[in-house]
Amino acid sequence: MELVRTKGPTTLAVVSGKGGVGKSVIAVNLAEMLATTGARVALVDADFGQGACAVLVNETPPSTAYEWSKRRGPVADLCLRTTAGVTLVQGAAGPIPPHETGPLLADLDRVVTALRANHDYVLIDAPAGLDGPVRWALDSADLGLLVLAGEPTAVADAYRLARLIWENDPGYRLCAVVNLADTEEDAWSVNERFGAITERFTGRTPDYLGWVPYAAEMRRAVATQTPAIRKSGSMRYAFSEIATALADRQPERFPLGL
Image 1 (tube, rainbow, N blue to C red):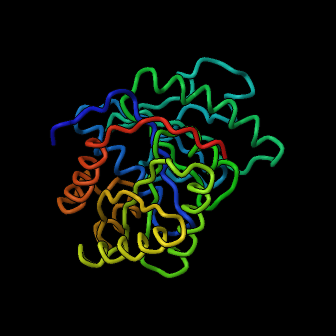
Image 2: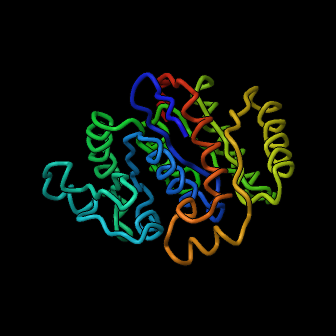
């Protein structure tokens, strides 16, 4: 796949309305696919206490952002270059006290700024839901990637997140990927239904980037802590399509201010 570079570094917040829809799996595989094109890619796991990115690639960064924030060393002290060539940053290895979330997010602002200086893409794997770290990730990003699934409660929770985003900034760039779909037609149907809901109540629809099938290859990949695109041709194709669609966009910065 030939890389189509954006005008400058692109920061992408990977979000979902609820857990269990494969958000971190999407983030890890998309980061690796972008890296295969020759792009310089960083992945920041900002799901404090429940981060899965390091587990999914079976690698351990030298430090977490939470540990690093106590001593304020060089940002490079945080970074692990994974087997696939992705710069991985882990937010925290376990739950942190609620009163320390704000200061940690402020420190992560510095981390993201440093990563943007020498990467083409910075992906932020945000927690599920609507809480502060999610809003920080969206505000730090040039655009959001909303992971959708066809299950009704997942759609409802995703709508609440999309509505929050567009109520605060109607111009915010929000894209969507449908995960866990049986067929391309099924994925398109989920996207169309979701878009109809958001169009009706917010006047906006997310920009559809593609879909990922519900497949045994992905489940095996998660179980073996090896990103699916390394071994599965169908998964590699799916993420290649998503990466191409993402690279074709030329996002502009829209401050969200949540």
